[in-house]
Length: 336
Image 1 (cartoon, helix red, strand yellow):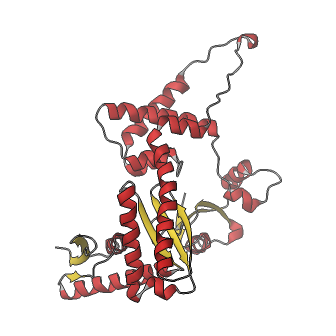
Image 2: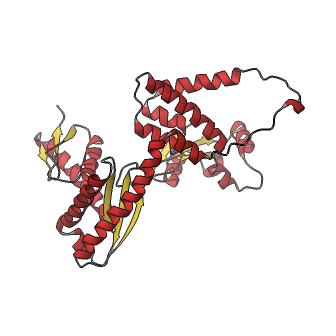
Image 3: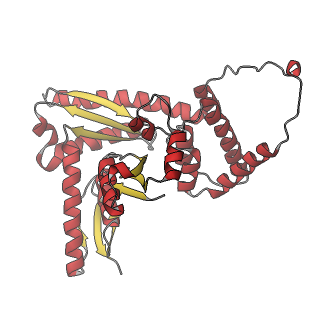
């Protein structure tokens, strides 16, 4: 398997074909993963494709995987899909293993458990990325033990009729993780209340605007659309930052401090992110040239994360935060 990456699937394919000196007609191409845009620059991932020259082995393997009557390009995108029953059975095993480990005093991060429950990725992938190899090893032992069991031969008439479980997958998750169910209810209510709070402030500013909401398990996103975007954003984004701080405080006063809220006006945040990344790179270059620390202006938590993430991709420099919100700032320093 030869994996090639690119900004998009097409970019990755072109890069791979060029490097292998192959034409599309003579290459077997499999999309491993599509690109992810991420959110505010976080979670952004390039596309990955597996490319190899066509020979008898690859042709035979492709023919076996293809579904008759389905176009070739569709077949290439299809991946084996596990059934809900298989997902539920695996989840039962993993939750059982995690509970036993926690009873022994071992710590499993809540975000890992949340990703497993929400099926954001395959369970094994989540555990591997989180470094919980002990859970994977325990799961493999359970699966091996089940595989090695010798099936008992019985008459068809002796086989009892299967009892259909009335418990849905969602009900199973709720019963196994009651805290997650409550968290889901809280985030929905919090989204409504913080959106209404922001609307009232904008109304008091005598600005016509609409606020669209969305959320995941812990983050609330408020998209503000208005013909007077400049008034909501303010000089250098100061008004929007104030709205952000007010809404965050409103949220923390009433709900879990694990929740966060992000405000955006049109595509200001995207432009601000690009500007911040470019500014951070210039600051890093200045530090490398002079050897002196560079102190940035105070910024929000989400903006500081963008700066730290950008710095991690630049050799020879490091960054850290100092001060208290709302005056907390980032210092870019040369690595000693």
